[in-house]
Length: 296
Image (tube, rainbow, N blue to C red):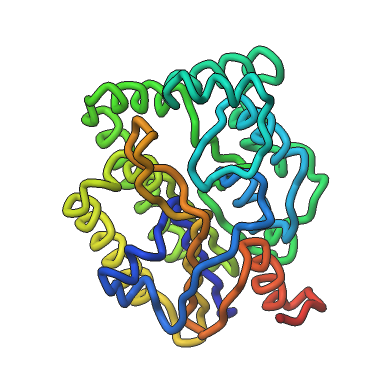
């Protein structure tokens, strides 16, 4: 059997919390923060797209840049310059209202950026991905590669959570997490060369739990156990990478409680490290028998 490469993509996994809680299975042999300074907007689809292509994809990133121009977010998740009238509005209107206005404007002008980009790489085949370099691959869907993380169900649950009713969001997030877990272990039992597993549940919950450290800690501990179980199913020569697009930090202005931090997470069981999320592409492709890439 060929060496297996397994990537666990955990949306919203925060480096500082992994370190604070000493989650040894997640940190593996080596771990680090990843630098997101190349991105105008720290938002899910463009960053995951860069991981599997090795480059920023303007067709995926631009709709989110346009979206953020109408929100004027004060956190670290955006470097986008906003129009003067939006800056003026940001001094008057709270973030929750600005976000609703921004979403409405963008939907009218360009449509829903999450829906428009969720399968862009699959639909257009314009860019090569890591899956093109291996014969036997599996994924349960990655943002920009078949996974929409902002479905009507998610939006409805998020809206309820902002009002203070977290139950629908937590139930939805945990249900999809369990489905994704089962799919992962089924894939691990098969003869795939490359497995890229993705889960959005931590990001969905962390927006609201970032100030509820005990509840969030329990979720992180469960993820640590998940990684342990995955590791136990791998052979000594198999490769395990764990990566996030960004972390999560408290934002006082955000009605959810928190938003994306300005760094991601990466760890490996090989001791290898990357500096930026898009570096994952060359790291993985360098291990393909059909590739001439060397990393770094």
